[in-house]
Amino acid sequence: MDRIVLPGEYLGTIEEYVPGHNVYEINGKIFSNILGRIEINQKHMMINVKPLQEIPYLRIGEVVYGVVQELYNDFALVTIVGIEGIDREIVGGRQDGIIHISKISEKYVDEIGKMFRIGDIVRARVIKSKPSVQLSTAEPNLGVVKALCMKCRHPLIRQDNFLYCERCGRKETRKIANDYGNIKIKVKNKP
Ligand SMILES: [Zn+2]
Image (cartoon, rainbow, N blue to C red; front, side, top):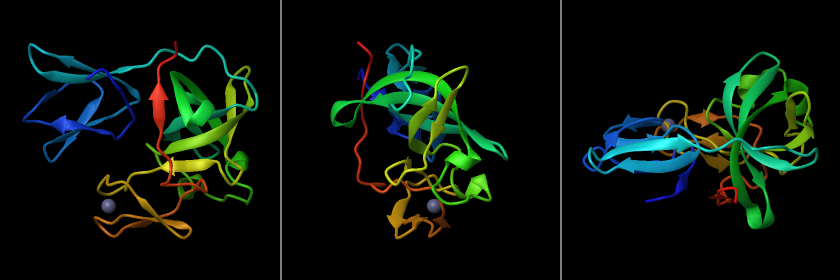
């Protein structure tokens, strides 16, 4: 099972595997905590997810995918996990970038927590690459493309301008990309 998984992706059950590095368990099910490659220790049947290598460089204007790691008053810290290429196939990697509160939306944002939550997968454009990577989601096709319920970690579905949890009924807000829920993220490793 040599494949690349996204944060929150289902990996198997605790009857099949022992949870190892960069995974978490809910109700006997094991999920990946990061974007990385699955590694199974056959002797102990321990399942780990190994982080991908660093992305060597990013160009201004490129569209990337990232995972929201931390939220501050003025910006979100995002781990960039891939660059969008042909057919939305992502070249995997890893680098940090920030999205300033003024670059989240075309509209004014008063509170960053209404737009992003930790663990969200976002599609963003590189607007600055040095000295640190800065990203923007202020376009209709940019923003959150996948999010999990904050309460029960079930994938949220879109309902008009909100995201909705079918399992617990919770309603959440995000800066939603216009194709939220319709994209299949396919990741390949850098050659
Ligand atoms: Zn829920």
